[in-house]
Length: 173
View 1 (cartoon, rainbow, N blue to C red):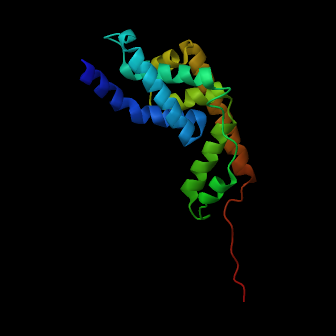
View 2 (tube, helix red, strand yellow):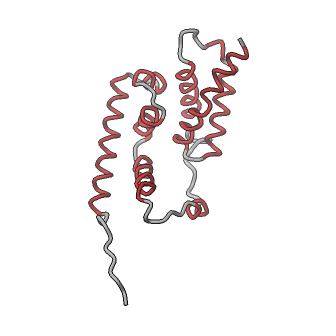
View 3 (cartoon, helix red, strand yellow):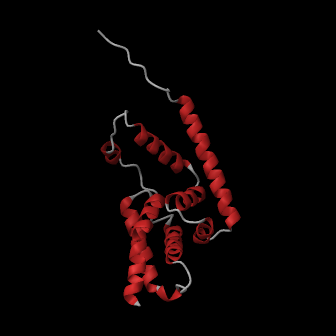
């Protein structure tokens, strides 16, 4: 039973790490969050119901640990100017620029909307599971998703409005 439990947990570690990075926006703090989650899961393994989803259970633990430490341990990191310069990209990489602008727009969302969008869009969790993980009613989850998506649409539309469509180059002699 112990080996089976470890295997079930290890299958979800990558997803937990990805969601933790989305929540705390810092790889080191995300790893700490996942470690705290896994420690709690191992300590409380008897609480896992045999018919329940291990993934939902682990995500619920991760989210609870995150909420408990949000103000202190897992708060958003200060901008590191060295890290900003390390991800320089050329302007002709349109897809990467669009991804970066989407991530920046997601960072502008309130925490509850961002957490819901990452669970459903990034992790592919069902609405029912996501509502359970976040500890809210399914209607509340759908409302957060709807408001978050609408805000992202507005941010994206306003960004397109101010961005030049295509830069025209002229020949200099």
